[in-house]
Image (cartoon, rainbow, N blue to C red; front, top):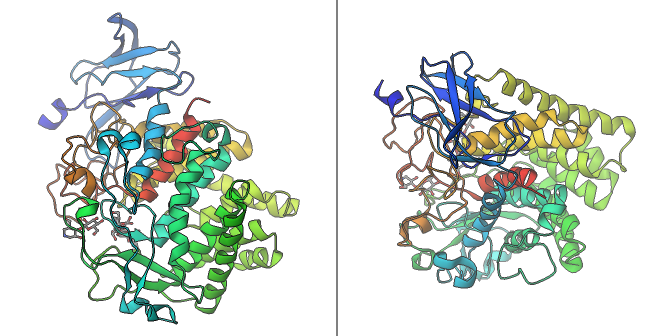
Length: 544
Ligand code: G3I
Ligand code: 9MR
């Protein structure tokens, strides 16, 4: 078909670590062999056999063959050639292939800060004036409960823009911040020495902590006097296609929900623990606020978000809060060491699956496994460990049986599918650590390869990193800053067949239904809770 003649051999466009599994996917060929070419000498250093052709049920009728060159461990730059298909992109084999994309993925948060001028010395060409000071936020009628609203305006500064829009939402900002803090806790040797060149870089605090603090300092403002937490801070309509400082619409605190209160309790409790050595006073303040939010949630267990008629911004609605209760209880147990919280946690009957903004059950499991060994009985701890391992084993099986060498099931192709992929990779990486068993790393690496180009769209899904990367993300700053290249280091949402935006797509297949266009907010937006697992997963693979 015309589609296939235009396809390339799919590789991780940045490359492979020296000792990792190295697989390329060759679409729609009858050829049975491949050549691996050293591009510096232009010599064929390997002529190998392709695997048998298989189809992948997420990608329609295309057939795929594997070229496995895992045993090539000589650092260098390479490409693959197969008769009947375009050459692969040039990629590297070395242990630094992910270092700069990892840093850029974290720097994205600085470049998307609200309430601060983004300065040239930190941002280069992406410098921009202060946007959304948020010192004059209004109470929407949906947030007028208790006494707070008697004050007309409220300060709710700092925080990161959610995504391509300029809203700030509690529930997904919680998991995003937590995931960055977890990256720091699990790979401290990576983050102790990383320098992001952000305004706080000259202090003695790791930059990832300082970046997380920018959002924590916003989150803390979202709590009302009664302990409940406002759901979001946004304009009523979506902002226009304009830079942050050009958006002059009034901004409102909207809704007060149990989901936001529990997310807040969990995130600030975890943060209290992680920042304690650096910011002891804030640590105490955060824990106090977390406990207040928890108490509010117990007294208001079903305050679900309902989008008011005059509000058009994102909903982040959720009426299944068992998982939020579990997560908050686990984090409060870890920080206070008070068994009352663990007893509450034990009473909840939870299913664990890879985390998302809406299903945070896994975060409780992960935190307990990494931090509660001394606090639990041996039996309790082992039970939790087995639950984690069972989940990872399921993903590992998916990887092994995948004809595309990636543990992506049909149900993973949702809005933000790329983050679904990377959150599964987190589960696998944690299984590798907790069980001291490196065979989980192969499946985690499979997701890194998938995200960075070994997928049927031909794109590396991180802006600025790879041979072919998104040029038109649904990101208002990148769309309106007058700079051709989008802000680097951003993970786009990724393919999924929902096509809620009704843009033009070349394919209806889940793994191919992706459009690199501004129009496609359902596959080509970016979000803070999507970049966070990218940071975590790359952090696990960067050279230390
Ligand atoms: O609840 C149903 C479930 O029952 C069903 O099986 C499943 C099948 O697709 O769909 C589930 O609902 C999905 C929901 O997310 C919860 O996961 C919807 O289909 C899906 O459209 C929805 O997508 C969300 C999207 O907003 C639209 O609401 C994304 O998760 C969420 O990341 C995204 O977030 C937006 C903000 O609202 C605004 N800012 C940008 C941000 C990123 O695009
Ligand atoms: O731009 C909005 C994006 O940030 C949101 O994630 C998305 C969620 O539904 O909505 C986008 O706004 C679109 C709106 O929903 C429908 N009309 C077109 C808007 C973007 O062009």
